[in-house]
Image (cartoon, rainbow, N blue to C red; front, side, top):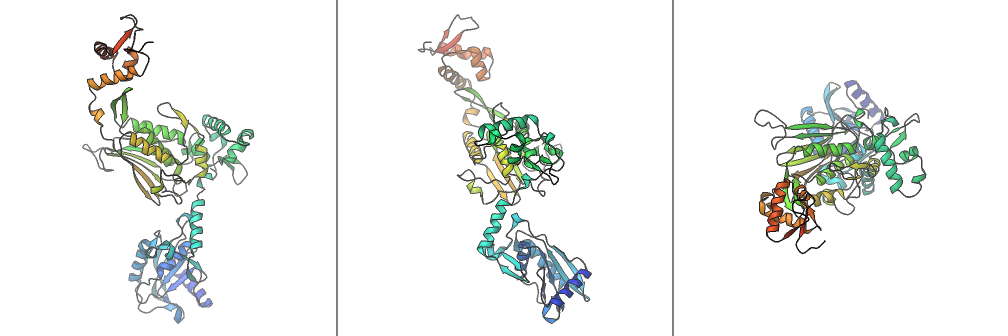
Length: 503
């Protein structure tokens, strides 16, 4: 868009209009002698949805393109700034300045074209369907429902930032272990001709690599984030930043002036960032204990399965556009909650209400999500699997994990430019607050009853207690006539079973 930023440019533009006898496609005149005109909102919408343009206030077209009498530049400048910020959705970053024309002040507003994912821009009070305009010739025209639907459709299909080539990267920047594991998984899980493709072709088909402008095959952003050895070499802020705060308000210091208790920058490919974030979170939260049939069970403040899904989703669905690459995924731990946020709100037509429902998934980063489905992953507890399922089940896992921990559903904060999921701190359970001799004895009996026989060491290990303490619980159950020993009393191989059960 050509913007008018000087008196000379303004004079040249007005001379063109005089010659044409009318406004231009990229420039609209408003006399505004009676104050700020309401029709300006329609013109702002039209320019933002087309190719941008300039609105000039204080010049009257009907009288030979000369300054309008009674024009108040201060009033119009203020009204224009307010209209751009509050009257239009999304708000516009208009360049508004006062310039001189034929010895009189004018207000010039340069309106930028919005990106495809922000269109259609519309007059807020009229709503999207009735307030979306487009610039045709020298006039503003209301968009048809078809045109609006096409803009929305383009929003859904226009995000391909993950498929762009990383100019300075080479195939040597892939992590050898991740790459080998991914190639093997792809050939095992995919049907068709995949198993006969060479590695390079398979990588290209999945958009993990692509040719640059010179035809040289290089990793794409998706390839680097999923399979790279150190993506932050090229994208320093495409990482995770963890911070543990001492108070419930960010930046509020605790006694002694400390503003945070712990912090860490987690780098590496997505699989590494997920597991490293879980590790640093785990060292900063408490792990309570409850007693079940399997004896003592550690219970963290936040179920790690739910947190893992939230982190993986944040890294997979975040905004990877050039404008979003300067912002990391944020994991903020407070005394009363855990917040995980990423740049870029829900993509396409997906709403907060649809999360976890059938069909409740859209992929902003189609190539990255497809690759991550087959990237091998080892969790903090040694479990092996894949980084993501990408079947719309992530939010279901989050909710079910919270339900199992007797916790409420998370709070979702979704805006155009960001998504945040908030987990509220777990409350202490009744079992946890009553971790006593009686319920441990009951759990030991359940543990023995669920097996053919057990050793003293097995009971001690399951309960998280010393061998000597385990012997006391077992002897108490023997004294009650519920359990019997197998083998010589002092033998290290002696085992125990429920009375009435014969091996």
